[in-house]
Length: 219
Image (cartoon, rainbow, N blue to C red; front, top):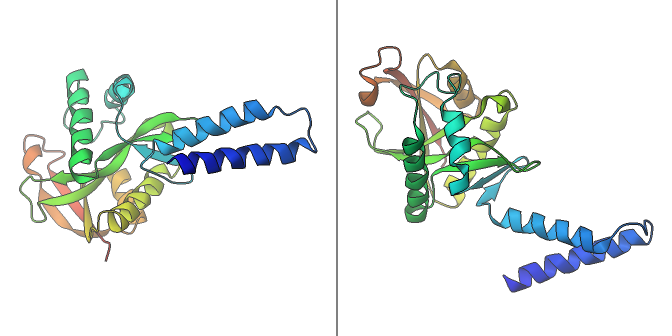
């Protein structure tokens, strides 16, 4: 790790000195400070895409997660609205699952601004269904980030991580059949419709219990 930082800081210094031959008003120290911060921030991510950074959950993200989960539009196809304790438990559960198994629904940031946009990732599912137990892929984004192609971009990166880092052969996805936006994402990322089932945890919610499940083969 020491050699990693030494190499990158040396690179940052050399680049700036070259630039100073043409732009003497630049300040190398400020550049190096910004470069170092960027490298440290990148190092906190488990993996990235051109626009997104994936990492485990931090305590200070609880208000942002709670705000997203209490947005009625975001939660339109979910049975309940999580409260603060639910969100805290979710964060702890995801971090524990990552420590144990190497995957979870990760907190996702927009690299350009370091802004929390929601979560995308992989998780265990054990409810009774034709395809369980399994690992599924899921996503939930703040509504201001809808329609930008971020969910497909993040999901594709999760597939790559699952295949190359975890050795997974397949990943499932589930949605109520009325959740057309999520189903469109599943189809866009190459998942195949494998059928319908009644979700055992949604039996008390007639509008949501009829679900579809999709499969992505990674082999």
